[in-house]
Length: 193
Ligand SMILES: Cc1cc2nc3c(=O)[nH]c(=O)nc-3n(C[C@H](O)[C@H](O)[C@H](O)COP(=O)(O)O)c2cc1C
View 1 (cartoon, protein in one colour):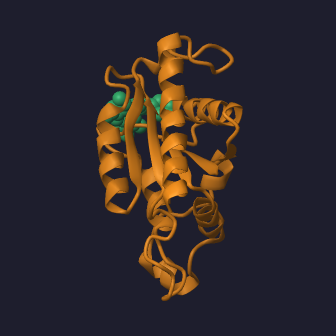
View 2 (cartoon, helix red, strand yellow):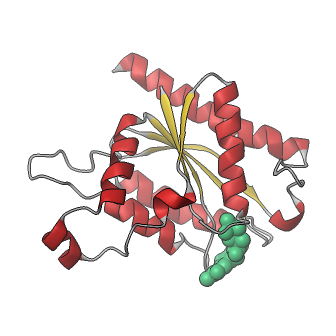
């Protein structure tokens, strides 16, 4: 059982990077192997362009990340919200990873049957919850089973302490709840298949 954790921001002080790190810490404590995607893994990914793909195939950074998706049974995404929707970084990354490298590769190989959980944090009052609606809908359409439990942290500027931990016990519990639910459902599906 491997859990891939994908942050939707590469900003140095990103709240969502902090959430991704906390999710990784909790999953490791729960005994799960974690693959935490770092900002440096995402930075080299170019803006999707069909001409580039046709000329050169998938960029190396995309190929590497796609293999990491394929190796994982479950995913946690920490998603900032831009204008009530998914960030360009996250959408672009997920779009590239959705592309097949060969004609005989099964469609959406990186996503089909994976279990995902969603987190977000924002300075706003809704905590990025409206963006999660978009992410949930998109993932559902590409074969990902997104668990209903999710966490959106409002007023993120006051939610974390200096070590990057969530100050409120209620929010710590909710984050652990999302990660635990993803692990539980992924394990249950693995037993059945
Ligand atoms: C283009 C843009 C649009 C944004 N739109 C929203 C929004 O709709 N809702 C919201 O809560 N925050 C919005 N924000 C603020 C982000 O939530 C904030 O920049 C946050 O820190 C981004 O996540 P990060 O800290 O993980 O980088 C927006 C920021 C940008 C740059």
